Image (cartoon, rainbow, N blue to C red; front, side, top):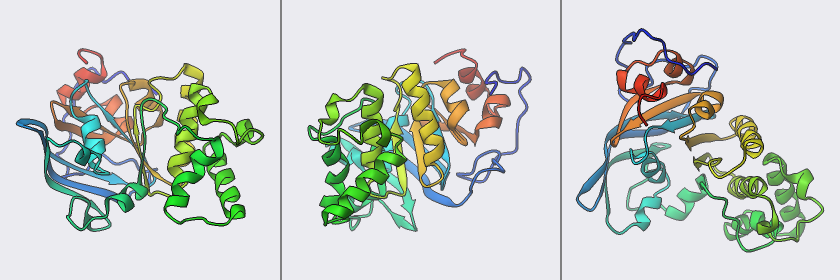
Amino acid sequence: MNIQAASQHTPQPTPNVGQPVSRNNHANHELSIRVRDLNLWYGETQALKSLNIDIFQRNITALIGPSGCGKSTFLRCLNRMNDLIPSVRIKGLVEMDGRDVNAAKMDEVALRRRVGMVFQKPNPFPKSIYDNVVYAPRMHDLVSRKPEQDELVEKALRDAGLWEEVKDKLDQPGTSLSGGQQQRLCIARAIAVQPDVILMDEPTSALDPISTATIEDLMDRLKEKFTIITVTHNMQQAARVADYTAFFHLGEIIEYNDTKTMFANPATKKAEDYITGRYG
């Protein structure tokens, strides 16, 4: 995909709140997550400012923008990982299935089962490959008997594109794998609990080009089953893998668009300048 923006900037109609400027006609458009007027502060410093966005099921949505613009902070709002930071204060709506994930009655453990996360640096547990995958399903009582566990481990590793490489060494430590294999193991661990959404915070930034291509191919397959939201600083990666792209700047969403349109004909000058490398 050519990521050079059109030289002539063509304004597009203002979308409904939370809707992309244009829609990808080949993508699934069922709503997964609805965000309205989301604000977040670290102490007195406001990091997110009145965010509005609708994220669609079984699509890949990329979050792009300069460092420190709020992408990862927003990602962590979706499974309440920001709750672990004492100075954080949040206002606004993050809704899944008509329920506000920030509601006092929300079960955070159950939420994080539904909204899994893969981090920038692979972080396998200090356990065997087998136990890395089956640990969370056991904790959530998704499997009990050994045959069920074996079936789940194989399925998760197959879905993560790792089974053929590790099937004969499942008792070896997850940390013994290469960096790219470790990241796929972390993806297998995330999908083993059957989430609805997978959050990925720069999942390939620490990997070599071959491992990066493998993860990107995997993401394209996984979106048939899961909603994927990924943070990336790699414009080419966003262009390759994402159905939709949201451009963040200084804690705001400046533009939200289907990716092909975003890179070919952005609706805002700020997005065009970022995509074409005038700043970043």
